[in-house]
Length: 270
Image (cartoon, rainbow, N blue to C red; front, side, top):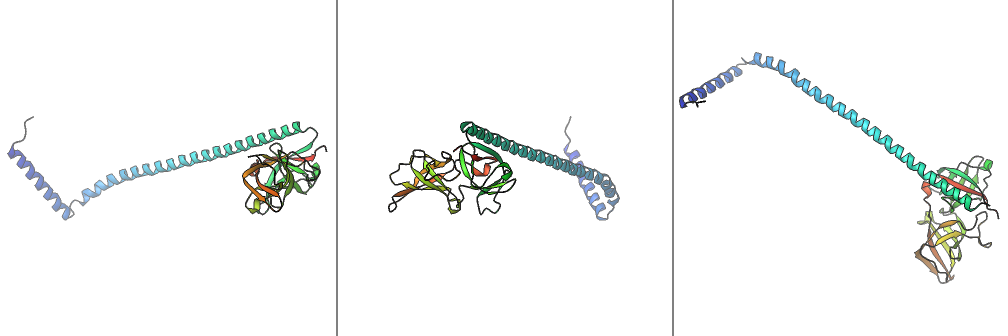
């Protein structure tokens, strides 16, 4: 196709300029208002329709997100419940093994109902009481043969178990290698447990187990010997030169907050 001549180009430019000036003048005297109104009548519904589609799209997206979040929360709750069930099964399995290992013992399994809501004392409440043969002073174990405390209050259908880590509790104890002492709860004094009155010459092995005492002189009433209290922390030993004794920190092997089932030792056959 041939290109425009210089003369033709000049004519087109002049026409464009004249047309623009005419439209400007017409707009100045509002002569174009009817045309503009007609165009607005056509364009505005189209614009509103597009905006409405956008808003409806946003609402639909928000609803889908809400559904997804609800499904996620339901799955998280189900997962937490499954983990709790697994922990309970593991604890029951360990308690069943304890019964097999100690056939002469008479034991009673109980569910944990709660703990001290004030946080002033460290105890558990369980769903077994005097109607089930539970008595004050009975030893309570969990996750196998881990000693966790003694029954201190009994009602017909429930009981209170004061945990050994509470500052009010003590129990006769011994190292796995033999030396005797007494374990004290320290939870409200900035620690877990400590074993006091160990002979000054006693050698404490790293992570050595600390057990309930079976010595007639030190054994705590109604607490069988040989139950696990925790393990010794050998980098936290304090020696008392005046009393010729030493004290060592003891860390429990049980997560008390995760306990769901425990076992009350009704009798130990002794």
